[in-house]
Length: 354
Image (tube, rainbow, N blue to C red; front, side, top):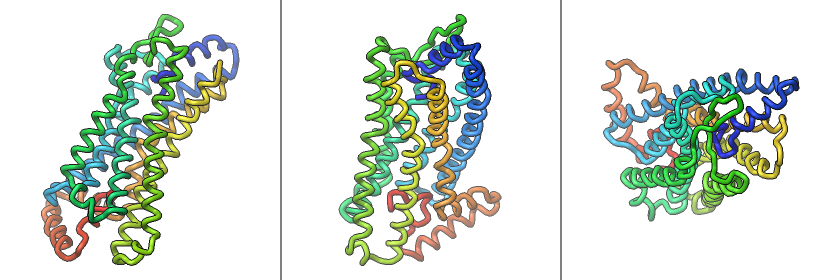
């Protein structure tokens, strides 16, 4: 996706700077790439790692207290795991930036880190699509879909999502390798067999499979959800259930909109790049910026949960209480479970409406 993707950004940028070293703009770009960008990536890495670990720990502590996992828990934890796996490899990418594109960790790690990079795009998109479809079933066909919307089915869906993602990044497994750079050093990237033509199909392949098709499905599903919520049939439902539906839908839509805002600029520039014979310096600046924007998505979801989901804030407080206070939580959870018709309101983020 980033400078380790099919654009061979590392190689191109190094060549550009080498050929224009006397140009003050090129020198500024070196500072931008080797100072500013590593700083931004470092902040994203720290915030994202901490935030996603908090989400995972909070969910597992909640599951321990209640002795079961919910459908939203399964989706949310896997989304955090995907982001966390990529973020844990980000220090190596930062090191490459600091070294002006030089990769010092061998070809095996080059392939693994590039795969984690691509996997974060595909798996995150697929999980969001699965969450949206589950939310669609919960809202439009609440009774008919109840028997299918279970944790066991959610686990199977997640396994399928990971398998599809693994297959989707097959080009990465095949072509991620060390790339010779000017000066006799090596960078890390994807070198396609015939770059002149393969760059087009790979860019379009990535655009449609990791962004356009999933987001079209998400958009259609949420349109149906909003129409259902505004229908007369939905307005006649119980007031508490209606409030819950609005709250759940707001969180789910926010997650998807943030994902779109973070990744759409990157894919737009990917397509624009296909029409450029020689990218300009402003294009390189913009490209680096949208890479950072896409990476920022890996650290934003935990903050969305904290801001929009009261139940998550409640569970977060419980998860950080001293050990001697924890035994009271299950009893409190059972009292709430028995006193209301909707125990699912205590879920981490009821994205699926369960």
